[in-house]
Image 1 (cartoon, rainbow, N blue to C red):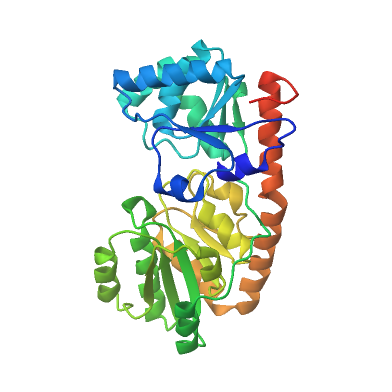
Image 2 (spheres, rainbow, N blue to C red; image 1 turned 135 degrees about the vertical axis):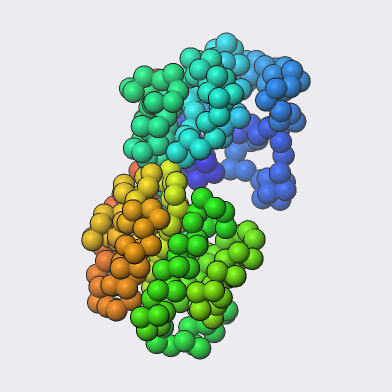
Length: 351
């Protein structure tokens, strides 16, 4: 969202951001445009609806014509309030609908009738959205996430440089995700246990927040406690990827994975579960390998092939880097959003 705001052509659009509550990040770093704080967050609170109504009236009086709404609760609240104040609304959907409860579905059945368009970040998410919400197929658009391909990744972090120094002949795979059941990191640990038994010098680097206890226990049980490295949450993920040879993701649900594109940007071959939008990012046998979610045998086979061949890793990694530069760049993402905006409110400077 921030990259979209930064990239908008100010000769055509004047962005303004509304957040339901302030954050330490916004207070410290600010925003690429003017931002307002609603001060209310509860969906079922009358105070939230009244505050939002007043804000919508204020926006419309100042010339706002279009609202692009991110995140789930806001996409329930904002469409009817903004539309009744003369402001068209776009909603964003970026996951496979794991949050669709009966209560949310009932609310979306009403609020969705005030939505002018929806933008999803993959074809897989588009299909889920079109099935689950009262939107015509023509209202739901796919725009892949944009990435700053020219961003510097910085120097190799000292802890990873030390790790590679201690294991000069090892192959390192990395998995970037917070530790949650939906990410199925235990599948990776099981696969590494099998590869260790076959004599492969393959290590796994886990980057992300969450409770490590169960995974550490499983690593010990599989005999790979010394080959599974927990880095925790990091602000230097792109720099960390420079130390790796393979990018890995085992999730049972993905709308469109930022981690996969980061792997590809780093020139890493990708091994990932064939769920959600993963198959739209990874071309099997060309930029990586797709395997059936939960199929540890297939996961192990693909990791073994990459572990054994530096030439294979380089060929597929080079393909992945080229694909990332062609399909997932920031300029394309911003341009497609601007086309949709103008399609709804017409050309010319708009808010």
